[in-house]
Length: 200
Image (cartoon, rainbow, N blue to C red; front, side, top):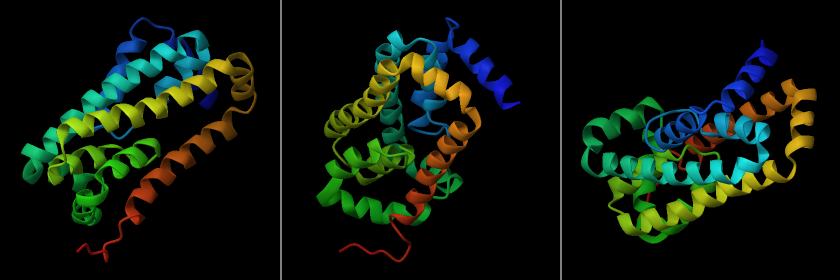
């Protein structure tokens, strides 16, 4: 089943519609969608390594635009949509602490969290809720999301053919490792700001 799904993803990644799907997932992941764009970025770049830079550019632009939507949700709709999304993903325990830390560490929070597997939506929604500067939010989002996607694209571009051969040979361990990595990000988001934390 896993092999068939992988083959389907590779075929789908070569479709002219794949770029639009990649952009949508990257946009949505920054504000409300649970899956990261890596699920499309990796197979698309493995299938066509020379286009990895293009795919990273698309991911960066759409992720930042989606981040602005998340920011607006946190700024204008936190009591309704924002709270519902935060509760849906179980991040409510860290939002107030996150908001307090923005006063002194807003830039570092955006930069560091944007590079990690921690869901970026918690950063975007809380940035708006905390009233962090929209201008600097966009600037730091471009830096951190660009770094995240372009580093991955660089690896996929440089090791294109050998990496594809490796993935296809060790498909199950690779997929399991990726899933563990993503789950670790979700768990990390729940423990970085424990419920007992207080800010002054």
